[in-house]
Image (cartoon, rainbow, N blue to C red; front, side):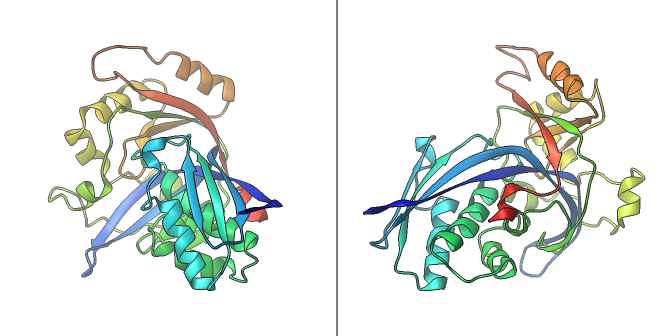
Length: 287
């Protein structure tokens, strides 16, 4: 039974990988990488209501995501077990971030669940401990737990907070779902990039090592990059499928998005987009 006046709401932000270099493959099958995570002011919304019976109930605006294996539920169960907590929660997710798009929606939802339930259940875990829990769920979860844009190494968990410019991004998501496991296991993936420093990124000496392969395998991603590159340098985020370009003014970004053709056929069919501003710290940092 849900108790009164014990509900917390939280925003789970999207992210961009401003670059992604794969510097090697580890014996355990994971990849060492370098990337720069830029958080965005575009987010999923979660609501957590306390239960005193220990049960976890999950609903979502997208019924297709209502699974016991959803990352939100996995995060909640993991925290509950770690804390030996007798309490539970009703959790509702309003989904806005496209899935399978390289925007980190699932990882952000999981991180938001860990941080918010730790507070709702009066857990005593600090951010470092929560990030360690999050790493068991996915390599991108820790950056969302720490709630700050960051330079990342290792498998993405070695984080150095950074303060970045905060331009407005046009983010386009083609109508295809790119599976991270497929890209990272592909024989043609580049895995031997030389490690760089922040100054090299700022000098334009970076790329997304997954982009060439994804463009080859998914023509819709290639078409989105070609279209967006007419207006500004465009790049893919993560393993895709979303692509992005930065603009200094919101009006300029929105004018570009407004030109996206509403085609019913062709390589841009079904593509969606939004404009979001880069942020350095998410609202989750206040919990």
